[in-house]
Image (cartoon, rainbow, N blue to C red; front, side, top):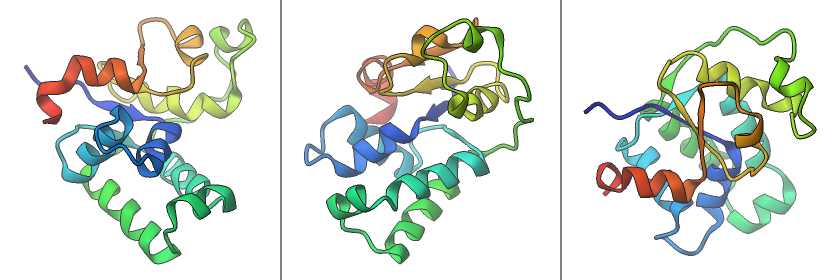
Amino acid sequence: MKPRPVVVDTNVLVSGLLTSDENSPTARILDAMLSGRLVFLLSEVLIEEYLEVLRRPKIRRRHGLDDESLQTLLIEITLNGLVRQPAPWHDPPPHLSSQPHGDPNDLHLWSLLRTHPDAVLVTGELPLPEVAPVGRVVLTPRQFLGEHRDSLD
């Protein structure tokens, strides 16, 4: 069976980089991204968000990577991912306007998911499963790892 492509939310990538537990779900997901064992979707917007968040002073102090190392990390991620250019979501979809947790900043994630019918979002942001578009699967890193352990080992 062909693995479903994944959209890895920024919070998962950052957590995977910052954790000292190499067996944590987020560290294993990041490792699978970097090694090419995970089929994942990217967009220019998501790559820019990864970089912007990783450059935040508080996060940068924790990971200790300089600009060159951050660029290398993102190049490796980009080379292993499937880059898509989703159409922008111009109007908030009904599920966001009716939900208190709907965040317009997450629209790029829903747009990216829309580029592949079987794509799954992996996020540590707990409100996202509640506001996911109908028919879209949203998993925590732990849930994802539980369902895909064999393909990531």
